[in-house]
Length: 79
Image 1 (tube, one colour):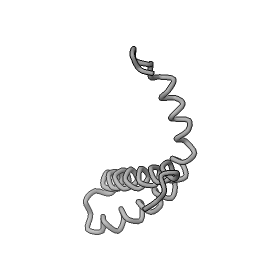
Image 2: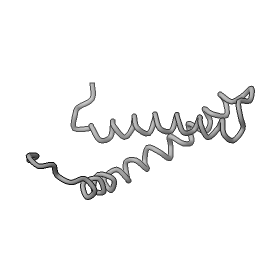
Image 3: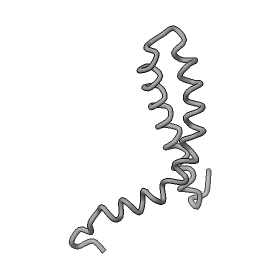
């Protein structure tokens, strides 16, 4: 197993993997329809999308965490 100190990197990897998978499939089907070679088109798009998504998530996630902490208010009784 991987050490917990790598939590952010492992989380970002799986988030990028799943989101790029889903979004590349949806966009591929939207653009070309359910054609005979949709799997080939999708896998090619997924590979490219993941290569963009993973470093993007690594760079953007600290900013998103800060925005979330600004937007959310503390509940009464929370410490």
